[in-house]
Image 1 (tube, rainbow, N blue to C red):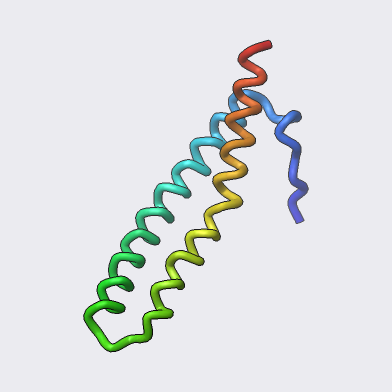
Image 2 (image 1 turned 90 degrees about the horizontal axis):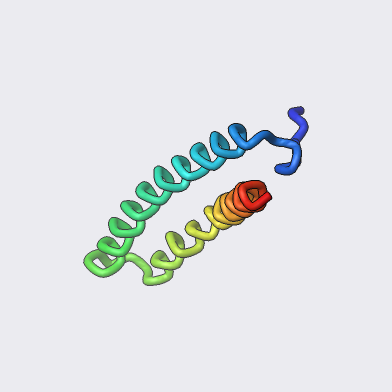
Length: 84
């Protein structure tokens, strides 16, 4: 199993690479989730599917929360190093 290194031990270049990869993943997953959300909402309002189905994309969006937190931590670490 790969050991997770703390952000303070990474170089600035590694932080930028990690930030770009997380940002790319967030954009890609966000677009896919948005498309799924729109399709599901269309099905909820046009078909005779249960209205509870609309809660699925909203709850799935919470799956992106750890990635947003990680991105914020990386951005904070980059800003801390730039100010030194």
